[in-house]
Length: 473
Image 1 (spheres, rainbow, N blue to C red):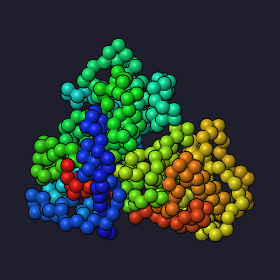
Image 2: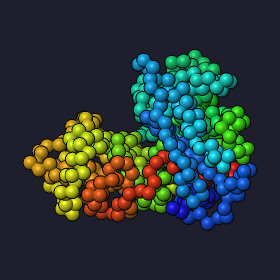
Image 3: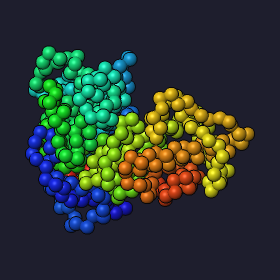
Image 4: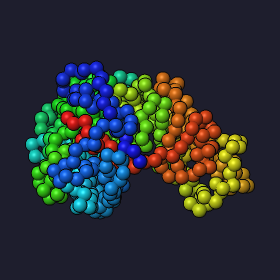
């Protein structure tokens, strides 16, 4: 597989202010193209350099170690340690998994690692004491909601802004601030995202983040700074002070980590991103109109657009993809509905009897429970899986086609909101294995649909590490 490079193209120069994006001139364009530059020089061992990406997901962590051609030299995963009693010490679990993964990398490869990047779940937040690195609060997980902070956040943010959701990073910060610092806070308390904190364990520099993770705390990636309505708040000093593009060097790996695991003196730690962005980058496309649909725990779509689109009513928001936008939304329909009705063997056997060229007359809305958010915002929507025909193959056909219609409605909504129309869809997740479903989706969507070559977020994080090593600081 030829290497996919993250090339750079300058954007307009942005003022050097708190939270501004650094080094846009050298790192700004994540358009993935064939790498044509000279081989990156070897490291101090004289061997060909390798690039390490680590993904911290909801249930475990993975690593991928690649070379400049994109070949995987090693990969592995760790599940998070089991909870003690009724609670999980997430901070300790993540730290343990991080260093276990570093130890899992074959020792022969470690001296060749030139750079490291890490992705984490969006909106997963920690409050840290910058004087000693101790955890003051959290971690507050990506799916934890803080409705107590929503009225205050909604009163300061523009209507339908991404932060106007109880699970946003800003709601987590405001909820903590109101409970602990309403009469004046400690200037030593700072906010860190999951990947910020894990990267900090490796490089030791406070206040560094990327503009993908900071989106849900209110950072504006279009202007390259925090907006004035946010900076005027009493907790603004807690925000990451140096927001950079994903995949740019932060600094060398800590000496104690380097020496313990046998990394080279040249190894650098690079900014990360969110897990969903890393998974998108792994798919290998960033051209406008290209999209990735993930058919797994949710039906999630991400589309490269020339235009930024935001609408909190539908959970639609845009991540910056250098000089373009990655617009996304996620339906509550999910693969678990199929698992509730059919075994894996049944899904394989019944799919053989489906004619994907023939539209199903059945009209379902497969939901695991009441409530939909995208492409229809209806918290009271009930699952619709009736009537059930006598033929199980016809029933499965109807469900798969109905999920394809939901996917098509999602891309239609993004277009109506102003995004670039979809031209081609790559598929990630378990549903990508079902060729009959792929054919159904291609017919319903009206655009080419194919399986992504790489789907693991750890691979996307490794591409960011490669970017950091080849573009420099």
